[in-house]
Image (cartoon, rainbow, N blue to C red; front, side, top):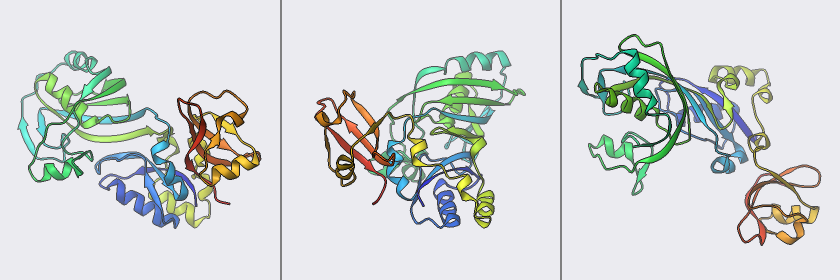
Length: 296
């Protein structure tokens, strides 16, 4: 089985375990997700199945969207409610002050990744270092917050909808807002509503997936790799070129019979089978194989 499913990950399950459960239900040996969700988070977890796993790193960049619940007056080591409490403060924040503070985090900003994250330092995960009591300096990263909408503020807790660039940590955003208000804040709930071009409306739960398997109806929720790559432009090659590309050989640029610009392309055979992704680089000497999809 080759394709993609959009899973609605349950709370209190790691992304790794969610992939393992889904692949076991589907009877697929090879599977991988396109972006980790914390165990406490729910929502969109895009899972690549079979040969589709070859394309995880080449999926087009898409914005991600989240809904979060935030509590003021507390700070933890993990920046969410599951962590060890580091401090508690009295909260005297008006809705106007909260909305004003949130404005400072819209647009292109710099964000420091949390210690409890899957990022690596010298080959070791930051969360492994954090669990050993080791904190290291993390380089700030440029991110973009396209949308930050605050609502349902009760004086202590509020909800927010966020649309952001890949690599954004919502926990860090909550913590930064709390710090700017002088009282601290932690994330208490998180739900990812879109990622990699997939939305929560199209997501299935593990229970629903089991039901679909029992009904032999999984085709209704498995998306083709081709659809996920649709934002890449396409090139159709000849049969001899298709054979060469399929076997990993680069194609002479001059024989592509068009002036294609630099970039990554979906490569098709004359009978419209997706062969994989190819790339034309600055020198425009050839179309190089990035990933091959189909087998003959």
